[in-house]
Image (cartoon, rainbow, N blue to C red; front, side, top):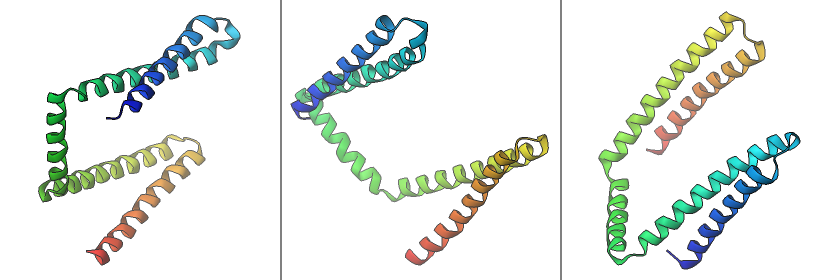
Length: 146
């Protein structure tokens, strides 16, 4: 990892700390409550990400860890190309799609029976129809391609 990346992560953490301080200590009045909360939330995210990436960059620069990291990258490249892993990802994606399909169908029916706003039911039905159409399109696309 390049040394410039480490400084970017340190600056990211410092920006997060500054945002948290401004949101927590400077903007205390009731008029700035929403902005204060926004700064606190965004600042905490930046602080944690910056610190995490900084620690990771320092950890990866140790010589013993660089060898282990290179081995993990090599193994990951092999796993990505492995046929079994590819099939497992395809099966998991299929099962996830079918589960979401049935959940979306049930939610659409329940919302229409309960009397939720018609626009909400229409949007859910549109997503449902889009999912069916996309499934048919992708099936035909991959049937021609493979």
